[in-house]
Image (cartoon, rainbow, N blue to C red; front, side):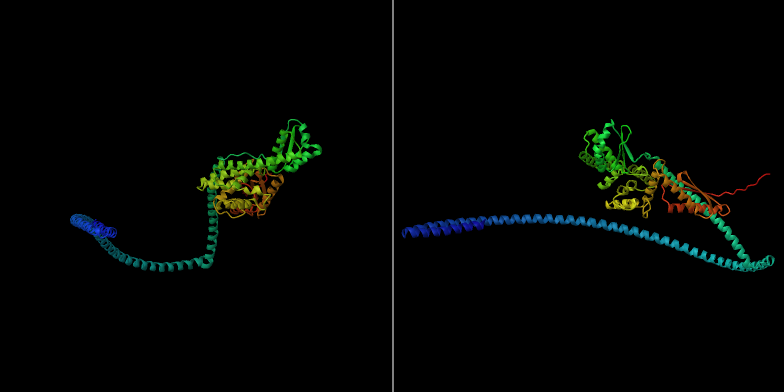
Length: 541
């Protein structure tokens, strides 16, 4: 404030001088005196004002200094109080920490004293035991000397007894030993065979009971239809006049229909019926729906036939995808690739030995999931593997190779879990099984295909399978006759009693079963029964 006032005064003085100079220059000499007088007055006034301002500034400055000194004293006292409080808190914390450490040290000292007392007691006990051990050692040495003495005496007596026995029996010790070893070997071999047989039978019984329990529980919780698939479809018509329109002029309609659908259309004397014949169920279904639409529309000619068949094929493709989605939702399976869902829907129009492939796969999925849950495995992954195990059959005409390996490639392509890929590829043992879910899929597949009425088998293949089964059983030495019974589910083997004893018969049944597994493919299981009997015949005259 003071500097600003002084500056202001100086500016006024400068202005006054400048004004006086200007006045002098304009008014001349006459106004110089008046200007100087006026300037002197202004200068005096400015001096007085500046002196007053300086005096007021000094007073204000002294007052500010006094206030600042008081404020600094107050701040100093507050800071000293704060420092004292902080120091007191730190002192209390330090004292507390020191007391805690002192208490810990006292506790540790007590523990050390207790340990020292325990060690002293243990040392006393060790000393007592050492003395006892020394006494025991002396006793043992004495017993050892006595035993050595007795052993020498026994050797002498044994030698005398052996000499007497050699004189009585007329055999040397080595000869008697060889006879004894031979007898003991034969006896031990018989005992071992009996023990092995007992263990094998017990283990087989336990495994059979447990496996039957799991399988029966799975089967009881699953129900499915029996084999109903055929190779023909019969379409009912309202009157026989439609047959002529289906055939067309000079047979052009029926030829166009067969070319577009790939099925055989049989129009014969059967009243109010037209027969569609094809081994491809998808084509037969396309032909059935197309013919029904054509008959309902009434326009039957080659161009219309091609248009309707193409539309039906497109509709069936969409229906197959929806069918696959429904099956996946029904089983509670999530995250399947859309292409896999489409292939699952295509299973509806595939069959194996007359068994619908989609129904079979759903049944295998349920069985695998139930058995996996019974033994503590991942039921969802098991159901997924069971559903996809025959996915390769939907592409048999596109890719070469066993359907299990084709399915393995498909599931690998669409990034399925390696466990599922292995289960699909190994369910017919084309590759090695790597996880317990794989044999569960194989067992569920066999159960689904083996239950009564599930599949049909051509008579030639059926007879050939029975002949192969009997031939495998006859290939073993000692077999007299073989009979395949129960539609090939059991083979009975009659052996020659003088060439095969009971122990060998048990091993023979096992060997025949293993050879059947290695050389034949069959659904379910085949029971091998070895029969050994001795017949004694006499005639009364």
